[in-house]
Length: 321
View (tube, rainbow, N blue to C red):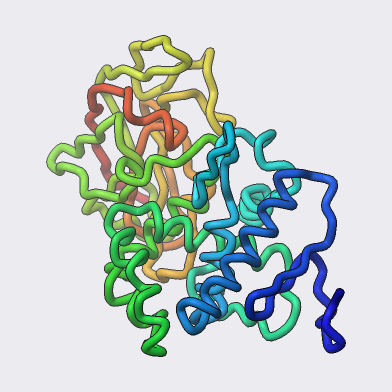
């Protein structure tokens, strides 16, 4: 049943109105492959093309990630429980790369070449970029409308960049891949915003918040925090201070603890967002590179909405001996 000139594909392949799949032991992943290749077929036959490789594969992965409940199909869902997406593994690949310090930059994702068989990592990272653009409130509408430009053979990458406030999305990308996990991601609350200054005020119900404090490489700074706010977990509402709640942990640190990171000038540099520094009530830090100070409380992206309150932070440079 394969065409005479069939390519050496690993899992799936589409051409025109036909597609082929390698049988899978997982019902979910079989459906995922069908939807992925079906998306390619739909775009080729109905839209006149699939756009650049990163877009072609990212959208196919985005729409292939689905939920099937009571005979109803939902496509483009953000993965919840790991058990509901057996053999998919895209989030694990991204998390493992971040842990190794090998996270892909946006520019690397944009450079994906699918003229030959792609690695599973390529599918993971193109999905991550498409998922962020699809779900982020500032880019979602324009990203969804890009498909209308394929028939005109428009510059899809250029359209996405111009329509999504691309420079700001580099920071969102860093925050997104650093915290990516099953269970969802609150894109609105995880958007990097500017904190109030003099003194610095950090909201407990938001992700990274940017200060106007520039940290110089090799200089030492004392960061102190105060305040009482509310962290919710598992239906419980916990009064919390910057030291966090030591009976609950997230990413190896007490839930609600004040964290710090230094955002780099290089928009492709993940920097310390992937490995933030625990501040708590007070800490002294000496950054190993220049960076803009970002602060947040330690909480999963989907756990921010029911937090309440704020804390006050002061930063002072310590005299170097």
